[in-house]
Image (tube, rainbow, N blue to C red; front, side, top):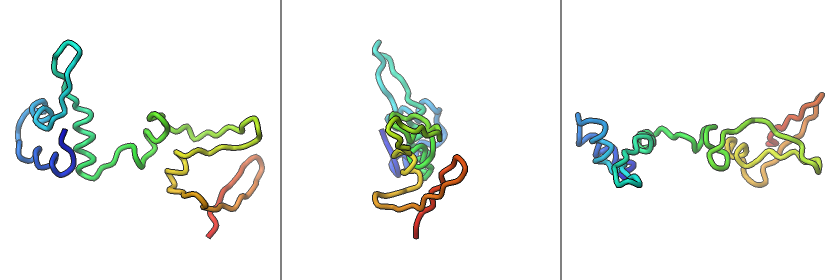
Length: 116
């Protein structure tokens, strides 16, 4: 399967061919259990978007959680009293180990503000 600049070059080279031929020529084909051919259009278009600089899932909300789950933006206090935010949320904000926050308490709310 072609990716990146190789994929863009192949798409440009092929020009006005059918979508099926384009997907096939770029290598986005797999074999079904019965031996038939399956064209992987979704993988092809995702690779094409990424090659053009559009990133789906890695830095956006969709697919950040474990196994591609979507984030719920709801946190639950655990039995031991801890409130766990989770890696997917800290990744969205590009937080690193050691980053510090000031904790401000309000009526039934917690506000975290990064320290300078």
